[in-house]
Image 1 (cartoon, rainbow, N blue to C red):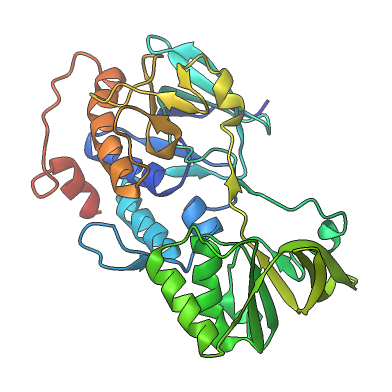
Image 2: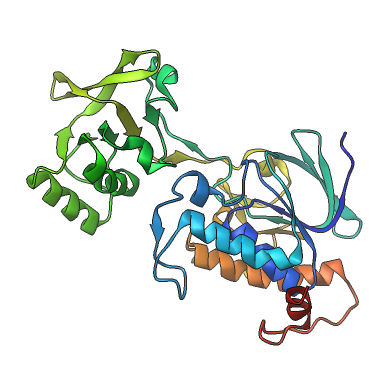
Length: 340
């Protein structure tokens, strides 16, 4: 086993809500470590849509997922968080009186006085069609997320799906593509009405094509795509393509955290909204991984949850001490950190 570093708080999840928790805990005088199964901070915002604009962060009219993660890291930096990436949380032992130990798949163990689960949707993976030839093309000419839009310059692109991601990227990439075809199984879409209207206008103007159908196969050699095979109404047809982007949604699961003895509601962790504490004292759950009456899966909701979590967590970390709520404008702890 790896050495067990001591920590006042361990945050499981380095997405936006987990990163903001570093700041909120720091404001309360609690030092935090952060662990995530992904190779970098930012969670789904960075892994799945780093360039997609987000419009509902207070006082920021528009920001990309990647830029939001960068700002949250900068905001947390004065509190010197320590990160453990590529680490999948497995086990939880201990209690709030004696401290907790979280074990990871790598053998790492982290001891902490409180644990904050900010795992978002859990172990997220894109849903994939059951095509036997798919593995040969993945990450070469077939993709489930766009991390570098410039890779698709001048290519013949097929976008498959009918949700927000499919339409957003079809609209975004069409101007730089040699051709772009949106393939969806029906005329109705799950995307925002404005995006659907813009897509239809671009189709009418000849800026992209739309085909009804379901993907049935991929043609090409050595990972290089030549065509997408689709079918509709008993007819099979091919669409010439250099790249195919598939957006069938995401499949999430909480994984071994479901075995931590926490009260669950389906795949989500139930919490008390006074402090977003789980049924296990000293273990908190915030962000998309938690549920309660009226829950909204929004980043800004997770920020609120992090603030209340920190107020309760500090009582466990330093029992018996008087803890006074302070605004950031007058926080002695924050100002001391910023002067360094």
